[in-house]
Every structure is written in C-alpha cells, then in structure tokens.
Image (tube, rainbow, N blue to C red; front, side, top):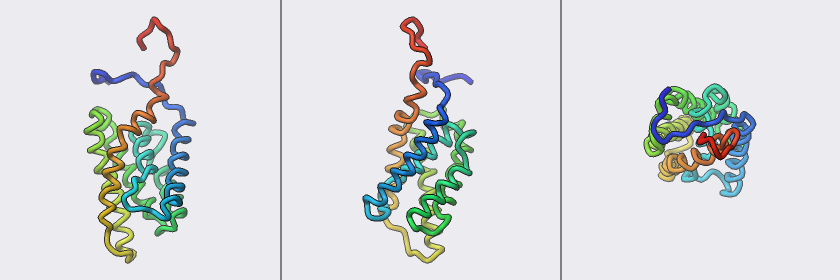
Length: 176
C-alpha cells in the first residue's frame, strides 16, 4: 500500500491500550450521564466516538460484536429501552468496517464528514427505536450531538494514535 505524502508509519496498536480506551470511554460516558442528571440530547456520545475510531483503525480487533455489547451496557446503565444503543452501535460499527479502508485515505476534514454521517445514522436509529416504543418526537438538541462528535474526531485521532507514533527504538541517526 502506498502511503500518502506526510503520513507517518505507525507502530502496531497495543491491545491493552485499545481495550483500556474503550473501557475509559464507557466509564466516562456513564460519569457524564450522572453529572448531567440524565442524558443530555446535545452531549456527544464519547463511547460511540471511541468505538468508531477503533473500528476504523483496528477492524480485526474491534467490531460489530464489541459495539453490541457496549451498547447493551449503556442501555442498562441509562435505563433506556434495551437494545436501542446496541442496535445503533452495531449498525455504526458495521458501516465503519465497510468504509474503513477508504476513510483512512482522506485528510482529517473529510474523515470527520464521513464519520459524521455514521454518527447521524446512529442517533437517528436511537430516535427511531424510541419513537416506535412511543417515547415522543426528537429533541432539536439531538442534532448537535453528531456535530460535536464529528468535531471531536481529529482530537480523538491525535490522542488515540499518539502511542503508535512514537519511535520503536529511538535513535538520533534514524529518521523513522
């Protein structure tokens, strides 16, 4: 595979770091729900952001099954309709696996636009499940959450790929 100009060669991802960041995002999502006294419609779903990131960058390690299990955990914690987050995360992960090869060729702006569509679809599925269960119409604040998540995509890329960008065996004489 030919690398695009300016792209750095990354080290393999440490599995402990991948699973640790997913667990950290799950705990942070749970803490934010408690801090905001319930799920605020405008708040970005940091677990979905982290999950989509690792599905795009490590599709053999993190996939649809992981999204389903994490979605069930969020459903249980939030007391939501069982399966609404699981369905949304599973569909989002499946579509992220489908586009992951093409997505990595784009710069961060175009990546953010592509993943924004994934986040919009995930939120729309959650709203649809709640609407079918008789939970009323969507809140206008729900439109802000996917935008926030897409805006956080470049920051997530920098933070989550930082351990892979370090030199394997640092040496002053080698540029890699």
